[in-house]
Amino acid sequence: MQRVLIVEDEEIIRKGLVCTIDWAAMDCVVVGDAADGAAGLELLRTTHPDILLTDIRMPRMDGITMAEHARDEGILPQLIFLTSYAEFDYAKKAIELHAADYLLKPINEEELAALLHHLAEHGKEKTEPVPLLEGLDWVRYFSDDGLNPYVRHAMERIRSDYHEKLSIEQLAEEAGVSASYLSRKFKETTGQTFLEALTRERLHNAVNQLASGKY
Figure (spheres, one colour):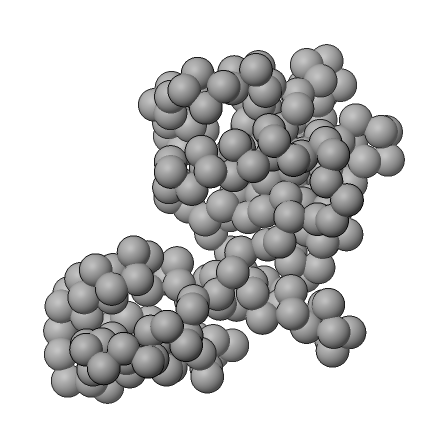
């Protein structure tokens, strides 16, 4: 079984991760949880987990700093960042720390299970880093003649203007439909919320910039 340590400052999210996810079905066991990076670092030293699932922004010590300390001490396990943020500096730090992936809040249990399964099979023996979040498959969506025109508009805005401050309300107003309608249709089409898709696209582009040296 893979040993998992969870570090998250929002208690309702942390307890939800510990108590509501069927870790045994994923061949995992939670060996501890902490509310900030400082407490998480102490648990890393004593519990020796295989996987660290951590938030980024936390009081006392953030997830990036905790992971850097653990790396310097030689105790950093497989690293998964849990975040609702998509900022360039975070993507850069994640690459430097060889993070396996980002998971966006709220966590999709199927996505988590797939990632843990991948780490169990390839984590310790892989020679190349697991890629960070992929953006939307634009070619597949835009080649679909039956794509909802309002969803298409939202996708086009994400693709071209991901660096801007976008909202579902703003794009719905541009398209002349209600925000609830556009939100529902977007989720039905992509399996993601608008915010999740926008965040993934920002991360995807940040990683591409880092890989090409254009930053």
